[in-house]
Image 1 (cartoon, rainbow, N blue to C red):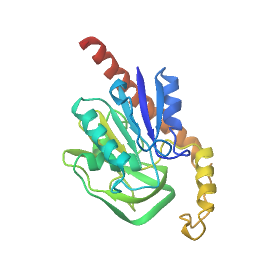
Image 2: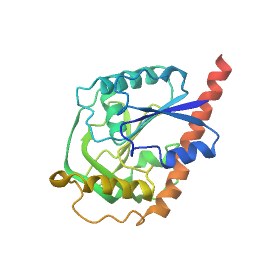
Image 3: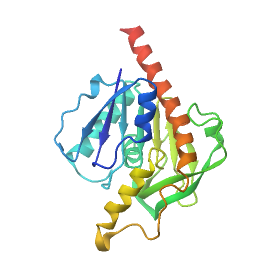
Image 4: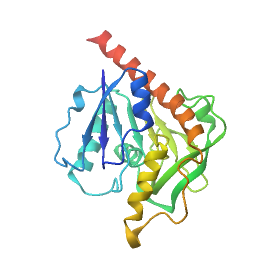
Length: 237
C-alpha cells in the first residue's frame, strides 16, 4: 500500500499529511516536478494520489500540469482516493471541469475558515467546530466543480474545501503545514524583492497547536479512507 505525492517545489511537502501516513503505516513517495518536469510517474501503482501546492497556476500551459490533470481524471475514473492542497485543489477542480481564476485578494496567513452544513456529515470533517483558524497562502481560486459538495469557506474565498463523490477532496487552505514550513515559506518570500507576497508579519506558531490537532484528525480519517481503498482492491484482485 503506497501513496504518491506530487511536489511542485522543495518546500511544498506533505508536512502533517506525512505524519498521518506514518502513524497509519502507509508508505509514500514523492514525484518532484521541479526537478523532473518530464516525469514518468508510477501513478498506477499507487493506491491514492496527493497533489501539493506550488507557485505556478493550474492554468499554466506546462507539460507536467497537463499530465497531472490527466492523472487526476484517470484516478477519479478508477475510484482511487485523490487529495489536493492549494494548487492541488485547483488542479482537481480543473480536472473536473471548473474554472480557475484570480481570487479577489491574496489570502496569506492565519484566517478563520467556516465549515458548511455538508461538512458536518462529511467523513473527514464531521465533529469539527463551525469555525477554525487555518493557514492560507494563495492568490487564485476556482468555481465549485459540478456535483461537488462545498465543505468550507472563508471571508476572502468562497471555496475553501470540497468533496467530489466519496474519495476526492480539494483543500484550498494549508492544513498540512508545520511551523517550520511556514517559517521557510516566509524566508523564501523575503528573497523575492519587489515581488514579495507577505505584507504583514506572520507568526508560524500562532495557531499551530490547534492546527496540528485538526490535521491529525482530518488526515487520519483520510488515511482510513486510503486503507479502505487498499482493502477493497485486495479483495477484488
